[in-house]
Length: 421
Ligand SMILES: *Cc1c(COP(=O)(O)O)cnc(C)c1O
Image (cartoon, rainbow, N blue to C red; front, side, top):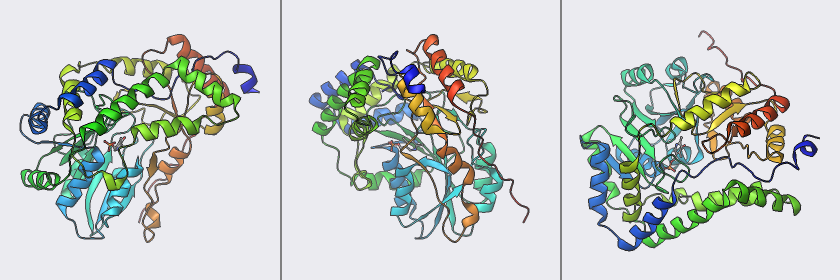
């Protein structure tokens, strides 16, 4: 019924994400693939720009860098790595591949931050490190978490993949390793690449030594990637994307498949087997260009759109992570009782609401079922991200909010208090 009401009016489709890279950057990427600047020189310049103290290390991706750090740290097999419970699948797989055990710490919904009481409970004799992810474009306040982790002797990984904000934030001063991604869907993307700030000099040089044994991705592969991105950028224009949606609809196909396949194939940085690579010179050159040309405050537009949509939604849905002071809405997440129903209604009306298929909650090890992150799991099951970015008009935001208010009911995940032990 909802479909019947909205289906005729929408010829455009607002995609769930925007590729945050301009035509100029892409053209520069192609040009750099041909020109082939000296790789190590560009890498040094990027690292010095990020950290004048010499603490930065460029990597092929955050996953590559995380994998590299774990190799260099060489924890004994079976050591436990705590995770704030929600992250992308690839990060969790890396830990398992190195014969280490990922252990979840459940989140609160207000900030999507790992709960201190649960960190305390999860730490055991074999716990060596904790990985904390800032989610959705928010920035967590980590003083207490890092303080606790350090008192317990853990290495603190800060996953800032969704939290890039120019020079404004380069990681918490006390975290041991702060990881920023310039992967395909990320803010300031270079179509790949990452910068890690590693405070410990000995660890950093071990990581460098291992990374120097990796092959450099060939510049032809990067050029191909740039061309594919140009294609995807055209596909994601709202009128083109709308046309694609209607074509799939006419042929009785679910457009989710072709579109997510396209994004995955273009955006994929390869399987975990293929992450042990070094950035090609052209990718480094694009990254350098993006850092140089980044204007502080250029995410303010996203934050304003997010705040506006938030006001329009009122209490029709639950807004996870909304209690964080800093939020630039890398994505706009909501929690609702029946995500698929809302997604269908939104898509018929030209809004590509979606869930997060690459994300996952970390499962508790079989012998510690009490650590199962029920809040984060329930949140992920009820999560929808809404298109919300500069370029959409207030009227379109309002039209989207009206659908949400009509179709969705709020869903609040259970947040069990820790039973006294
Ligand atoms: C994207 C992302 C990563 C991985 O970044 P890559 O550079 O693609 O490896 C890790 N963690 C989070 C939270 C992410 O969003």
